[in-house]
Image 1: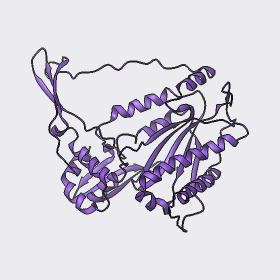
Image 2: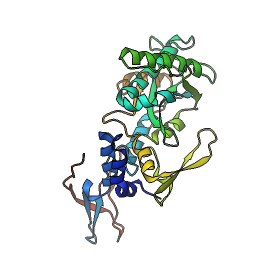
Image 3: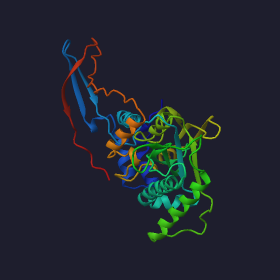
Image 4: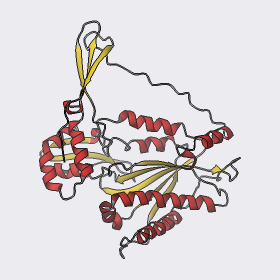
Amino acid sequence: MNSLAPLMRKHQTALIQHYQTRMRTQHYAALQAIIDCHTPVCGSLTYECHSCSKQQRYYQSCGHRSCPACQHRTNNQWLDRQRKKLLPVDYYMVTFTLPFELRHFAWNNQRWAYKTLFTTAVQTLSKFANHDKQLKVTLGMTGVLHTHSRRLDFHPHVHFIVPNGGFSNNRRRWKQKHGNYLFNGNALASVFRGKFLAAMKQDGLHVSVKTPRQWIAQCQAVGKGEPALIYLSRYLYRGVINERNIINADNDNVTFRYQDSTTKCWKTRTEPVLRFLWLVLQHVLPKGFRRTRDYGFLHGNAKKIRQRLQLILRVKLPVENKPVKQTPNCPCCGLAMRFLGFVRYKPIIHR
């Protein structure tokens, strides 16, 4: 397996020189974090075997959400929280995509564009749910922002996992639609377009005359929801590429594989190493921006509403098991080792 950190460490200077006009604070921070991950810079933990007195040192992870070498536990924790909210109903994945003509604008106004992408998409779904004859409810939604295509090009879009239904206005019964259908994708796209462009005009942002009239929104059934949650969890806290998909890195070129969204076949893409590293770094989000958000009865503050809903639908809640703190085993005798201490090295100041 080809690791991302050695590539960034080797080409760090050249990468900054080549892309410094496009790099922002979050890119420098992510670059350095990935390079420092599992090295003495992040600090070390020391353990000792009680039986044979052998000592073992382990270097800490960087903890950056774009690092593919760590954050596995955080990813699983998010997935476990979402699984506890699953209901015994059908689920839909609704995707809203910014058109190609607005990607340059989105890149130069990332915080505004991503926030508005979430806001207008939620407003669109809420409007459809409130006006639907079978529903007229407030939906529960989990949204996840993706800024990349499977080829790692800049392609901002947001996915929403939406249960089929919601509470009635008096919050006494569950209402849902019949059949394997939620909302029409073309109708969603039309309303989403109007709301996004209206938000641009309201904030005094220029709307290009080349902005297309046809935008893309997709609404598809995904069964009981868990497979879609697993798919979305892959890109929450571990960057946009799995290091196992980097299949070759030599002669200043990098080849990685990706699965085509239409054919489901695996394809490869080869780029010069600096171009490849930028393909990865460009998707680092602005500092503090949350990639995933919950709405309606799936929001973190709606626990009481969700409990009432689970009683109505007779949901069998999973038993919560407290995580057991694990210690490494001795490489010599195989017994559990005891923790001696943690050392944090003086951090290097980077731009």
